[in-house]
Image (cartoon, rainbow, N blue to C red; front, side):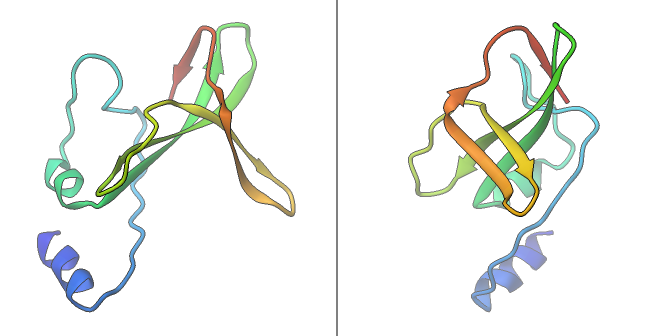
Length: 102
């Protein structure tokens, strides 16, 4: 992975690498990730969640975990995927209430 990152960087190629996980590994007091080198080498990490509220409805959330060289807001905010618009982020709507992230 390091060679791939270095190759892309040396050729000034912007890349977006996507990884799907069944459970977020960075939530809570412990961090357990098998791809630690990837997180270390990445300039940015954005997490998109399915949100399950205890009241029974679902939503979506987004969080910027890392963006090298930038000040980031460390909150999980609402997002949605809308027809003819794509991903829409609501930066002023922080997730509230009782929910589980997946």
